[in-house]
Length: 289
Image (cartoon, rainbow, N blue to C red):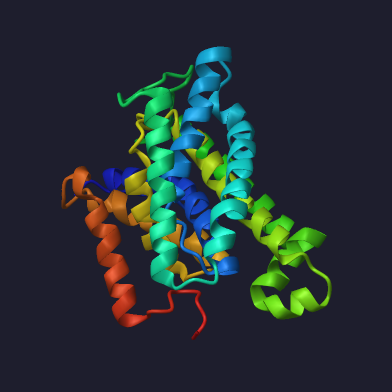
């Protein structure tokens, strides 16, 4: 087997894993704080993609520069969804939460189809086909840019959670809701902001994916499944686990195409997820609980 080909696949998977990590980071943050699984995560990704696509078509602004608009738009969407839907279902049984979030997903997907149509769109940017060669290894520049921006956004989220007062309130509410209430924290507002931040992460990730893959109202579904695998691999609610898990899944899926067709790459993700559930159910970075 050609070593340069294996290295090529490893680098491509690692770069795509950075975007996977950002998507999973938003999902893991929402679950870690509110213990609600956001089944609308993939639909939110699609809205982030369409926001950037619309900006590109209207203004010509590249998605790698308009990602903050998608992030802001999805923050507002996430905030509203938490206030109107998630906040009402949090006391309910998990099965009821799933029904509500699946319903939210269907509403978002069908709204996207009504607004932008059902046909896939493949927008071209100035450097969609640009590459960088390092010896025999080719680096896809759009993937490299997406990776770097995704890691930067993830780092900013970690800084926000660790060093800002609101971030500390989010962590306190996740650790002990009753204690946070006793010290005067508006937990409902904190939850809404947290959901908004998680949605902003997936919105930014959607913008970064615009130069890489075609857009359609159902594009987010496979990414949602992959992000579930990543969160389970890293540990439910573990943000470092989401980051490391995304890189692992990205590389594993890419290298898996040596043995299976690329259309079946999610077989690798689900195989890893099953192994983790059997051998270490709490995930790589999850606690015993």
